[in-house]
Length: 286
Length: 128
Length: 137
Image (cartoon, rainbow over the protein chains, first blue to last red):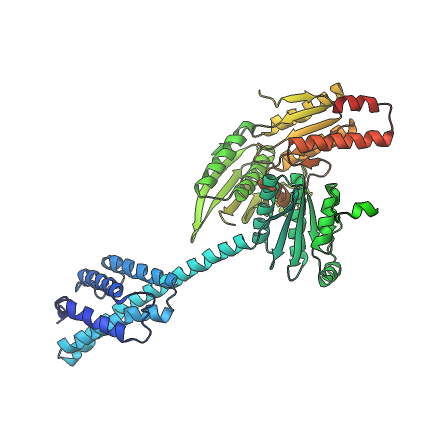
């Protein structure tokens, strides 16, 4: 009786694929916008072929058998690619669950004896539970990869170093400063200083929501690192609330040149570089 | 590898650098790691009369890192709490070695027994 | 044993560190430099560390020492060309290198040294003024 299952599946391979496709197409959540039916069919067929080839009477109960490695691989591949394409977890899971349904339908039709049918169904169920876990795990992994990549991109984007004048760099910081971001900012700023040969750097913190002692420490570090490179660092964009918190927390920023706005920092920078900016013609009146 | 003379320090640093490059560690983290290693090797030479260094590559998920273990049979450190404080030194140095090193790496562990020797383990992740 | 060469350029001493320093070499450099300053009466020291990839607390201390010692001998020290990674590491280590001036590159370092000496001379209103003018040309 037990031999029946694999044999049945082999015999009905074409029918299973047909049913599976039907099940998938019938589902309202089918994403025709993301994948054509033709591609879906090819993908599904590959999975069935490899599953049925791997399936024997010996390993059907041992879900961790090495024989299923190839199947698990295909499943992971499908799952990861779906995670990247933006499928929902439900849609990805339904993919494998609808195959289970198709197999169960076949068993239902082919096995007359109720007792045997139940046993066969249970075994198939167990196997597919495992496949679902594989799908789920890799799906989340795929999503995590997407998140990590985005985090990297955000850190890249969020720290632009702007050359505002010859010898003057400005770096607007937006968002919270933590140690890993400080490191990225420091690195970008220092490399930009070397590349452009600038001698004044303006750190604008108008976009930083709060400054606590840790953030202040990060700022101080950045300033001393720029000094070591032989450039001066000005901090600008200190909002009144931030000035209050700095004083209340007892943070000592006295070693740093601070300016209220980017404009006044720029004026300071011009002064240090012995530059003068004035309105055209105004020199005549003075 | 064994470090017993001052001249061993530079080859040792190069060795650490090789490993760091192999796991694609960023330049800043490389510099931090090698500086930390350099501090510890100096301590080992000065106070422990040289010793052994073990270089290992470790991985955690998708992140790789380097673990260095420094072991000497020197006199040991009597008060680790004091040794880890900024500005404290029994020798004539700035007293930045141990606490500074700790700030440069991700994980830092020190074990010492007076009369038996000192073992320091540091770990730096490639993206940390 | 190898040594770090010290070049003399008018009133300044120029040191370019091209190799990774080990402690002995750094100590020798410190001693050599101080001797050279007193022998030549140099007004400024320019140390180029653009090729140095590692500065640890010992090296940092040597650089600081050179700064303080030469100050005693009436010479200013400028460290130029520090690598960004080295700067970050030094800050993290807690070594802000107080007492030495820094500049981006040799050219800026020279300008800085010249201006420092100018300032000092102006303040003292020394008859020495003629001397320093000769050098700047």
